[in-house]
Length: 549
Ligand code: NA7
Image (cartoon, rainbow, N blue to C red; front, side, top):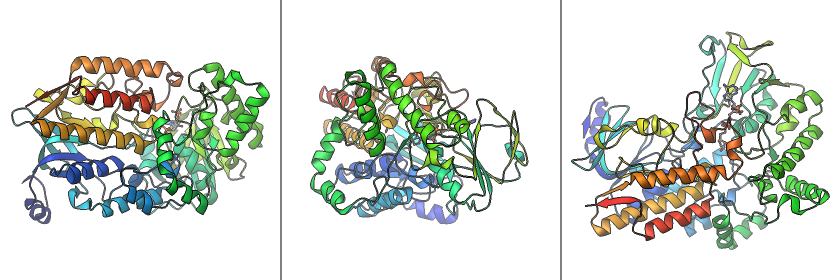
């Protein structure tokens, strides 16, 4: 072990461990934990996980903001690889809150004895492929150096906080926080003047909870966002029993749903039914709540006229709920189709604007000009604040990978290959970067899918691939440039067959980060289709990859 800057203690601890492994995994969230289990305990490889945080959990370790909760229903937001785990774990609510998901992932880490293979507090800064040794050489921020034949990134899609560069932030005399890097001790909003920038899924979850204790909450909205009630509630004993008794049926539903959710998307089209019937169906879906709303009709995300009917329904609901017509108009002034950006679900979001202590500011009409020592100044007014909450999202998908200096064959930088947007094969491998796998990388369904479903599929595919290589005595696998080119075309075509690219400011397109290339990043062709393609590629002897000894 070579260490540049370690304490004596850490030098002694790490000297006892080998520095060369079969596999290095970056990240100990949902992906990294399962990948570790598969490679260490199923294939018997030497595996080391490197994790920046002091605990497992990834996204759920960092996102501790008020109201943080998963939008997938709990009975489908879990690993399915272990029947015993499924049998023993009980979720308490329809949508699990952050502390419960973190407890679950800690339970998994303990149950499968994963911690002994994870080095916490270790952020990877660089990884370079050494062609002669067929080894990935990894450097951490503390200067530790490790090596492995395979490098697997399990860094998550939404783990690089995006704090917009608003002039004057450094001068702010109050406190500011980003939802994705929330202080573990929490933030006390009692009696405080709070400004929240951002009304994505996160802001829509946090605003109602912050408003409960804040002296005053000012929500700064740039783009009006759709939201459907989540209808969160404790799970009944009957439902819990139903899930345990019927999990294979639930899994069948998840496997058949393009987004990995446990329900069927209706076959009917919006204009197959009368306006009255349509209204009644939307009303029923609104009462049921959650992302199921999108499954009311088959053509909601592919036909603009069909989508307009859902948009109008939600607009009417907002106008019904929010008492002040001017506020309701700002909240419902949509400029993109429903679900073309990630559709939030909420608990009393729109109702929050009926509170005396909540104000909405329309940034389209009056943009933020600067942050002052006292608060936020828009083109129209200055808002004095004690705390600013940035619910401003992430440098999604590529951000977590590109903040590591990843270099493939001959020093080729991933940042260079992806200068005009991410390019890879199946979202799993990049030509010029042998033996590097990117779990839920751009170009795979990832964020368009219930994440654990996408993660399990990737982890199992990678495990089978490495198992196959070992059985055949193969040492290297590398995506072929032509395969990469045609996959990029397929990712683009899949997106263009939907309404998703019409939300020109979405993070799916990288549009939320100034200077980031505008390329639709996730694969929108559906999880089932993607899974079939990956299976066919493996069955054909890994078509599109070069495998060598
Ligand atoms: P999102 O969905 O990227 O939302 C970020 C919000 O912050 C959104 O309303 C943005 O407005 C707003 N934003 C970003 N930058 C600015 C600036 N500079 N000024 C004003 N407003 C800004 O992130 P979330 O954390 O809510 O959700 C991310 C995913 O996590 C979510 O989709 C789930 O998959 C889980 P914009 O719409 O860009 O105008």
